[in-house]
Length: 168
Figure 1 (cartoon, rainbow, N blue to C red):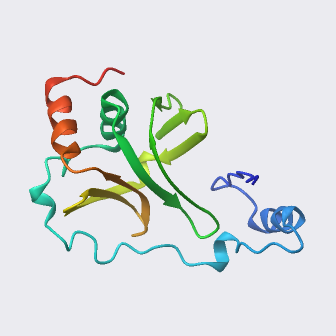
Figure 2 (cartoon, rainbow, N blue to C red):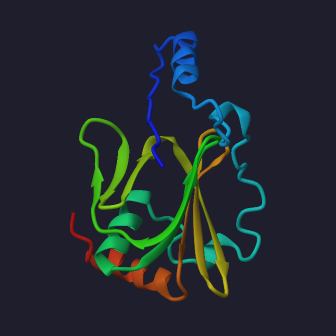
């Protein structure tokens, strides 16, 4: 599977982008493109247990990812938009904050994840018997990325963050 990442800046010409998109689209493509499939709205999050029950209720995305990488905790990751979705479970290795823009990047072999940290406005934490789910919600009210950690991992990560055990 090959996906092409095209970034349109605020000053981009929308009509020109639509032309490029149509030229790159495969004739018999079965996956919908971004404007044909609704994104996941952030409704009903946190119903299983209130966020105040989790030691990670105020963690930043960057700190969470750094701590998970340092502790070697497997994360179930779900991220996507209207055109594509990634769901995987893995131990991440390399987390880097961009020096040029507000992006947090996971740059691992087999996983290249780029998250625009400035657009992530809210964290919803849901505690379940099988672990905690952390969902970062974007400024448009859509779930941008979700991570699920195993039982006990939230406490391990919170402890590592509090003690400064998460080197850059």
